[in-house]
Amino acid sequence: MDFKLKIWRQKNAQAKGSFRTYPVSDVSPEMSFLEMIDYLNKQIIESGGEPITFEQDCREGICGSCGLYINGRPHGPMRRTTTCELHMREFSDGETIVIEPWRSKAFPVIKDLVVDRSSFERVMHAGGFISVDTGSAAEANSLPVSKHNSDKAFDAAACIGCGACVAACKNSSAVLFAAAKIAQYALIPQGKAEAKERVDRMVKQMDTEGFGYCSNTYGCEFDCPKGISVDFIALMNREFFSSKLCKQIPGKYTRKV
Amino acid sequence: MAVAGLFLMLFLVFHLATNLLMLAGDGGKAFANAVRFLTENPAVKAMEYILFAGFLVHIALGVILQVHNYRSRPVRYHKRLQTETSQFSRYMIHTGVIILVFLVIHLLNFFFIRLGWVALPDHAESRHDFFSMAVVLFQNPWYSLIYIVSFVFLGFHLKHAFQSAFQSLGLNHTRYTPAIKVIGTIYALAISIGFSLIPLYFLFIY
Ligand code: SF4
Ligand code: FES
Image (tube, rainbow over all chains, first blue to last red; front, side):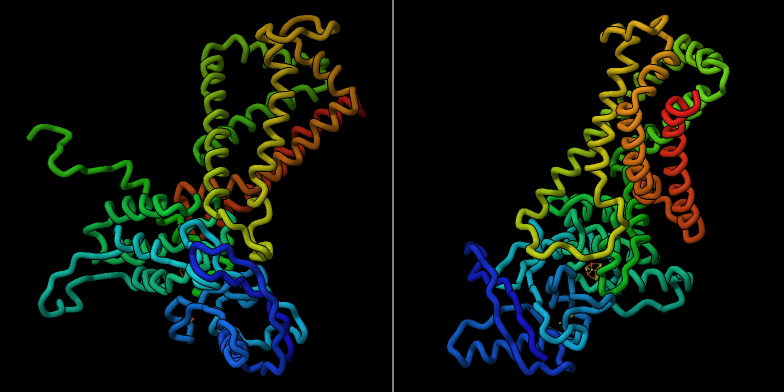
């Protein structure tokens, strides 16, 4: 298969980038999207050029690092698929493919197609943790959790932190990510201890990072490779309101004791 | 946003119910009675201020939301987003602005006259004679057209707004959320069609 690739090239975070067009030929339909870029990079290197920089690690859809904005869709035209799991057979021969990095104030471009997603990390640092006892593992049955809740928490925990939700959102909002991370703790007993402060702090951090506000367009759910549901956003909103409405400030009592 | 929006949606229902009295075919008597009741009732007067505040809050938040969200993506995509989204959600600010423009025209026509801020058209009998005013205004096809078009856009706005408000408030339920979406569509249609019936009535039937 032959393609024309229009790829965003940018030397570093400060440089002004631009698109460059590369023709590639003899691409196997069985190649993954990243393999296709490897293949192109090999040719670029052989001809003495600077290869295209992109982020990748697991190449099996679990690390969340390979996000590319392909033809107007985060992770390309297939739903429930990361860029590394996407195959060239999904494109038609001779097609022009436009490849861009995620675009968001909170995800600045570092080089070519690589963005800095440490804003996600800081949202996690703000509240994405639980207190656990150290020492030997607790007896499993000492923490009852319903099957339904454990399944739901597991669905939420499937989020790989790729940032496609932000890329797919017209507001570049990160609520689907934050909601997944909040829900994975909110639904199980282990997460209860910090529940109130968690939602408060994660939401605040999200705003500090410069992500947009959610307006329920649900583009995030459509293009999330892990199928995280916007139901979790409603859950996050519930958690948020309950944390705001029933605040217990340590050391302050409504009635003197 | 959601709370103010839901409040405004409730107001629309009452407003439509009152307006539809104009179609009673009794020369506007039932409608005039309702208007008299509403203008003389102190509770309604108080509500008017809350309503005004509701509009202001909703508009202010809408603008803040839009500006902040626009700034959250300083470098735009070269290729437009192809991600599928709920259609009307993308144009909330646009439909919102259209509704705001209509609201200003509307207030100029009716509400400000009552306050004595704007001069009354000569044919109306009293400051509270909204019925004659409606007759005059709606028999002008251009005014009726503006009115109907505005309500079509309001319908688009509401189609997204109704279910979105519930989602924002965290009211989400495996069984009820699909029902809320259906009710939202019916509500949006009812408001659009309901209000549009009035100019159509004065244009073609009255
Ligand atoms: S919610 Fe989905 S799209 Fe967003 S970061 Fe997690 S896996 Fe990626
Ligand atoms: S490289 Fe790990 S998800 Fe694609």
